Length: 461
Image (cartoon, rainbow, N blue to C red; front, side, top):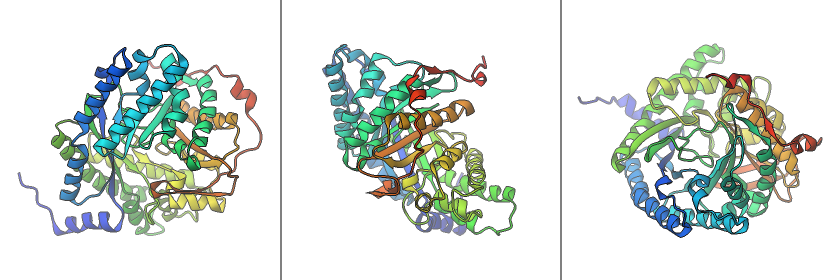
């Protein structure tokens, strides 16, 4: 059957891409590395290199061809792998110093492979320790500052909490010092931007830095992350100022439906071209530093004078829910995180609100209860105590655990910077005002360590 495309639809697609910053934010090729496992580290590395290069050799080329054919920009091409702690576990010797070196060498191998196939990032250098830490997970965690500091494309993650398990507070306490070391090991603390701490992470996340290829996924899959804050902002701004919020939600749903259809087309075509399975479509509004490409500006178009003021959490809840519903109407493959991201440094509207003092850490934390992820791309003073970093992480993980949702933390303690100072990373990472934190300490709470128990809602068997 031939599908007829009207002139109005042609113009609408042109307007979304050229005028309103609609794009495919990421196409991500997930690769299962479990078949590469070996007790011999050299054998493992040879197998991993062969698997990555053979599977991803045509990935970028095919993505660029599809981008050119359909005229919809694909901003990032990425790879996710099976969590590295699982892949490496059999090749570690028990000598902690030597094994940390092996983890760093493995990260360098991944970085070389990512560069050779031409992808922008490779995610999955991490592991899961919601209830306890294996030797491999502990060793890999301790290697993070060197591993991410010495690589350009490798991104890391650790899941420290889930609704089923609760929060591993011992790991939370440890990760606070790891993040500080990671920030100090790279220029302007940029290494910390490549690392995420999770509660309830999803296995089909196409976005970085927290993407990984889940153990329950097929051997090779394509996951797609679409983004259209500019398209949604224009639709919201064009609505009457006195339009009821339920009608506003309908406008957002219809807009999300349209951008989802375009994203699924790209994902299916790329998967077919590579001969791999089409996995999921992440319908997330992921902002950039481009003017008009801001989630914060959408909330302001709803009627807030500035994002962060009273009503911001309710407006974000409306936006996130409407985007999810619109995506689910358009595709049966909605997955990933899907909703709205609020990465502070990458969103012009959010960054301006922080500088103005309207958007504070406490308000951001409240907004994470209804957004897609959590505290994202937040610059904090370089002399922040490790226990304070751990306490911020514990708060955010608790929101995820108690509400059975994915939450994440990406904090960047910038050496030499204090609250109110400015840091600029350029590109998609943007720039940020260093956010002030509470001065009162949380030391004794973090030093208790142990396991924060799972909530009663976790018992559903």
